[in-house]
View 1 (tube, rainbow, N blue to C red):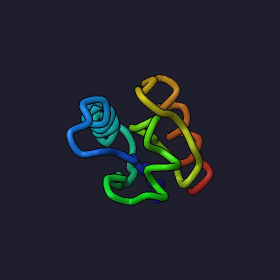
View 2: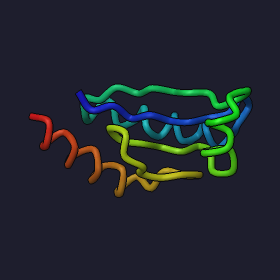
View 3: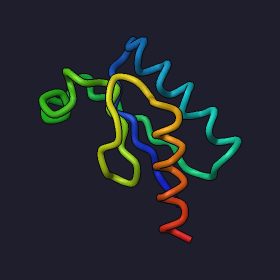
View 4: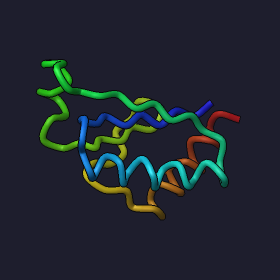
Length: 84
């Protein structure tokens, strides 16, 4: 199963928008979404604090700040094909 991980902060408007966009693709593709809050986690804050939301697909960095829908669709399709 393809896993999309979103590193986020509490109250982050861009994070919520990114998650909404990602969820829309679940009607088209099968994948799991994992939201990880970086609040209060120094290591994650150091790695991702200035770029949230940070989106990974199967552990590989994909995007940050905003979702490019066509790029996301292409990346999800590629990952799904590789895991069939």
